[in-house]
Length: 329
Image 1 (cartoon, rainbow, N blue to C red):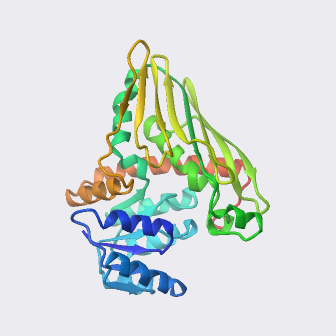
Image 2: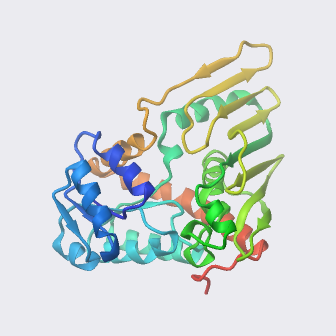
Image 3: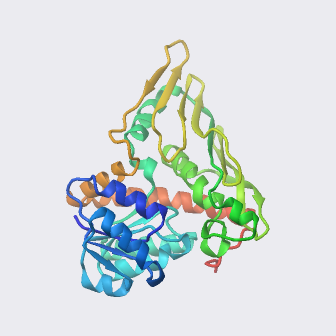
């Protein structure tokens, strides 16, 4: 399975670190915008990628790989993914899937019509620890509370305070804490519990209208889920589910789920560490490879179901906080 990598930022480099360790996957080309060619050439040297290109459409026309991996600015996900599907490629797109729910629905429809494999690179949903949490969940009895927190002081926040706005803090690029960090919390909650009955979002809004941090509340039948995320401050991150018969807690950032602990009432605490690889992204690329090789399109559809729930939650929350995106209709 061949994957062309598009992008030269931190997430593209992380992806390459993972991809180079996955058996049965090769990266024959990296694509960057012309002004980022030097960065692409440096990555090509580091990861032994034979070709560097700066013309995305020409690369798609060359059919140099099976998949395109899109590690690019959020606002470009939809257009780049649609171009790839139209050219006959399969797609791995970084989170968030798109900027709006309408874009997500269009991309899903295009993928289905062309029978192209389009994956959202939502890392925790591919981790063995996530499967372990699903297996332990029924032991908790009726669920009463879910809590999640993904907070880390952004390396770009000081620039932002000086009014030097990076894409991660730019509404025109579909940035902000909700779409960058809270999306992971929302995906974990959606994968475990489905669509919420209601959504609310209390956000801290910066000078340009973007959310630098915020608190998401999702209401379900019988319980509520609270989900905090911050790019303007730090705190210990975690994911926790509380039931009448016990609790499950994963400490650390929700995009890694390095381990989780189960405490059932009247029983000894158990901690599980089921992930096979140190790098969080290796599992997702292995799983995507296997799904593609066994032609398991049902798994792609299952991913679409979760993506649709998450995009619905994000959009409702964002509009409630009056955060405008350039991609809004």
